[in-house]
Length: 263
Image (cartoon, rainbow, N blue to C red):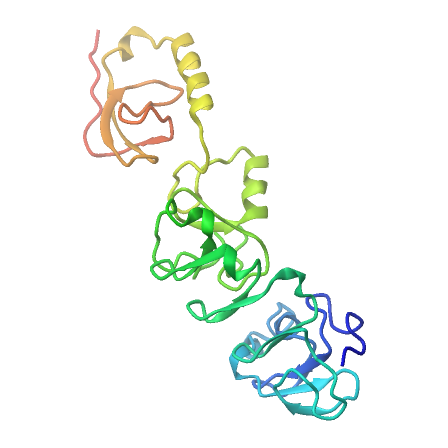
């Protein structure tokens, strides 16, 4: 039966059932509703908790209010409580346009269509097929908080971007960084996009600002955040260019003393 399809649920999911949380025994529309209520700043720190999603045992049909074991169809009225149903995650959703699928490697349900993603065992998460041969593996790449907003990435419902360095970040957080002219990874400082046009402009600026004669032979040790090469370059007040990859995404180090010829 398809009674009430799309008319029940919460701001997170359209579904025709509620869940009884195994941790506190209370009834919620979904796990996010539980966590919003029980893991917020308004709750005493000692009482905050998140729902163990895989331990949910009971659901309540939204049409007939019958509490029962987790299953797709109500035992009393026979209504389908979710067009998409995962018995492993105890997850229901009437909006199948998300193309949900369960990934055994991740241990959770994901969206976007199983045919469009692959699971990387080393990274411990699913990536778009377009990254299969090009992504840089970082062990448990999504099993941490977003380096900008600090929301846990692995089971986040927001879009996630994989940076060239292999680290992960919310797509909206990456866009926010760019609005503030931040183009390096918050974790490792490697450039997050092609900066070659910026480096050419810096070449011109450095060339247009000659340093005083006293600094002509001053050398400083640098580390390139993009290629990881250590080198010694001529000091300039604006920036220091990596002789290996031509990036200006560098920083001074203390590997050796700066030298300067005194006139």
